[in-house]
Length: 523
Image (tube, rainbow, N blue to C red; front, side):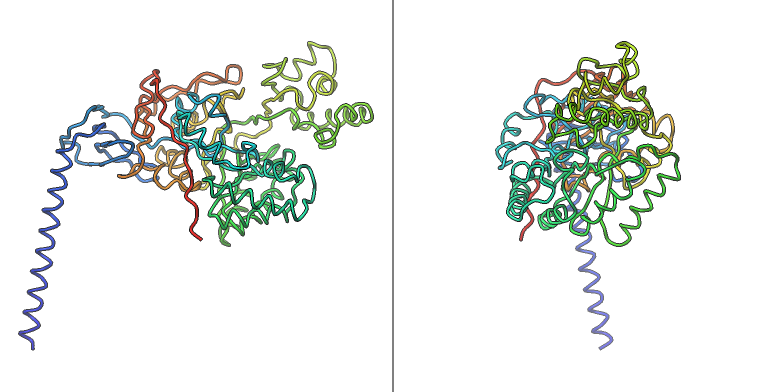
């Protein structure tokens, strides 16, 4: 019996040895086969920061069609490709993913503001607003036909659902209208939307209560989606209540805080308190993340300064006629609280580029009267300098917080042209508060994981070839509050779906982006 056991062991060893040699031969054959292939693009000797947060490594990257075909850490190996780029001394990263962007792919499909700062994918349908179509497949098909310059991941807006369902500005929707919202939401998620956004500081989302939001969150959860929220109130006194309202929806689906900030809050300790609130939620099973733009001024419509009783559906002219003194007092107090008229910079309308203080001096009238008479609640948008830099920096460096622009090709704020470049220039190079690999993770791998883009955001064989080549010290933001439409610089090569779309300062004539669609959850 002992002899028989030894024989079996020898046979097993021989079989394992044979399998090992076979796998070695197969690996050699695959390597030989890969060298016999003619690839579309060879990137030679790049320092790869792969979007996972792990340490960089040197490698050759080979692209075939729209995908990464091979990653070879043997940089001495030879391959045949239609084009080769000598990348020694350059960093290769995934294309950046902007989790909160704005823009109209039909009107501005080139999206050069995003490409110039390395953004290859954007998430639209933000703040509760998406195209006013019951069947979003129609809109998505139109975007696909346009062939935008960047990839687009779509979210359906809760405010739009309210309008389409007939709920409108009702505080408590009827059961029929609630069911209609749920139906429209499910239909949008089945069409390929990645989730739902809310804009609870805006009309009509402002009127939604917790019962309505939680019922919609259940639908999002059933469909495997995500809720992104411009929360109800970002002011220091109310932000925690706003976060808790969103976390309640997190019982049903993953939730995400859009452009996290603490307006009027001060200091790193305040940021840590907010982050501890989120950490506690995660410890009890809630999947919560956030994004942030690296600026201390927000940007939105001037209606933000007005009370809800002066906004739609109320008649503004009637409000002026009957509550003028109350409105004047409200505006004066609110602007004063928000760091005064010097801290509001108009970005559109007849007074574009001027602060409320400058306009008041030029017109020789109180700023509150200018808001009431010369601008009104819908007459302009503006930048509001209401955030504390140490607090916002502490939020930005949290491992669950990713980067966004909250910007567009037409928004009069530097974040729309510079946010991602600013992270590298300011937070990696100058302040040195983020290692490069962590910054890249926040701008690629983390947003891909959060939204649900399994084949983007990291450099891995088989993933889509959305790639950037650059030297970090060359990256510059360029956009300013005075001149926000200046393109970022320093990203030498920008590749979208395997196609070179930008080299140096030159953009290719074609567009390579895709209309991305989330695959429905199998019931």
